[in-house]
Length: 163
Ligand code: GDP
Ligand code: MG
Image 1: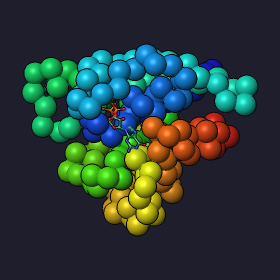
Image 2: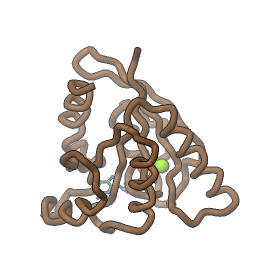
Image 3: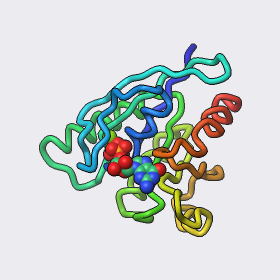
Image 4: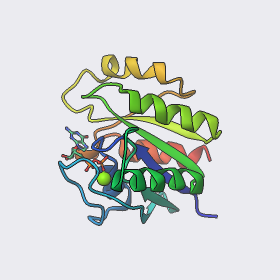
């Protein structure tokens, strides 16, 4: 079975940018407007001859109403559909209450999930990663800069190796 990987996190952390990297597509809408991807978006990728499916989501901000509530609902459905979840956080904005809420959801649903600290470009990535340890994810975070494609192929290779 082709593994299904869901990208979840707050709006604007770089999920769609990472989706495009992982699927080498320009299908996912990337924008400076938080939450532009309203729905779920599926794409395929391959590394070392091994295929995988990626789901991009609109994001979960924790205080949603109306269209944002729908977006959050799709994000939770994507988590349920996935074999593994990449939980994306933003090294620049630091940890937020919404990040803690998502971490709690993943724990309660016993999902195989990995923390991904994005936007590490131009930062002392390790000092910025430290605060995210409080999220209580069990594994070392992946440090990436999706927009520069940094750390992305190492991450996906390791993930597929450990499935
Ligand atoms: P999403 O809402 O989580 O899907 O986030 P997007 O992929 O739409 O990205 C939101 C913004 O963050 C865009 O302006 C991206 O160019 C920017 N972004 C994404 N990845 C990185 C990164 O690695 N470094 C920096 N500096 N910006 C990034
Ligand atoms: Mg998006």
